[in-house]
Amino acid sequence: MEERKRIDVLLNGLIKENPVLVLVIGTCPTLATSTSVETGFGMGLAATAVLVCSNIVISALHNIIPDKVRIPCFITVIAGFVTIVQMLLQAFVPSLYSALGLYLPLIVVNCIILGRAEMFASKNGVLDSALDGIGMGLGFTLTLVIMGTIREVLGSGTFLAGDWFGLAKGFKGIPLLSNFIPGMSIMTMVPGGFFVFAIVMAAVHYFTKDKSKIRNEFGCDGCANAGNCADGDCAAQK
Image (tube, rainbow, N blue to C red):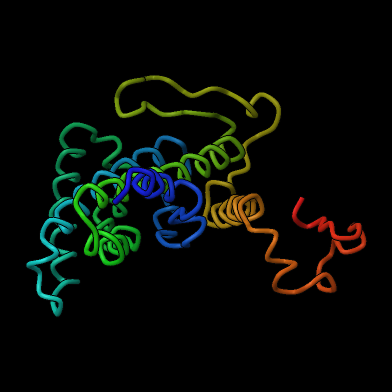
C-alpha cells in the first residue's frame, strides 16, 4: 500500500470513519464509560491496545485460518489480548480496573474490534492493519474523551477529576460550574449519555457531510437554501 494510502488508513478512524460517530458501532461501552474524562480515556486506551494487537495477529495469521471458523478464531485472539489487558490493569491500575468493571471483559465482543478484524485485518497486511487499529482506537478514544468532558463538566461541575490512575492522588479536578450552579446529575446517567451522544454525532455529521449531494440527489427544489442561490451558485455548498 502506498504511503499516502497508509496515512489515510491511519486518519480515517478519527473523523471520516469514526467507529462510534460515523459507523455507529461500540455505542454500549461509549455510553457506559464516558461519564468522566478519566474513565473514558482509560477505556479508550484499553480498547486501542486490544485493537492494535489483535489486528496485527489476525493479519499475520489470516492466510492459515480456515474461512469456516474465522469468527471463533478472531474472538479467541481478541479474548487473549483482553485477558492480558485485564491482568495488567488489575495489577498496576486497580482504580481504573474497578471503574471500568464489567465493560473491560466485554471488550471481547466489542463490535469495533471484531468488525475491524473481519473487514480489514483479515484482508490486509500487518503494517496496514496496525495503522488501522491505531486510527480506529484513537477515534474511539477521542469520542470517549469528548463525551466524558461534556458529561463531567455538566454533570459534576468539574473537569479532569479523579486520581488519574494513581498519578494525581487527592486531585479533585478543576472546579468549573460547581461554584455557580449545582451539577446536573442526569448528565452522568443513561439519558444524559444518549443526549450528549446525539449532540456530538449531529455536530460531526453537520461539519463533515458532503453538501454537494443535496443538489445532486434532490435538485434545487428539495433544498432549503434554494431561495439564497444566485444563478449557477449553490448556497448549500458554501
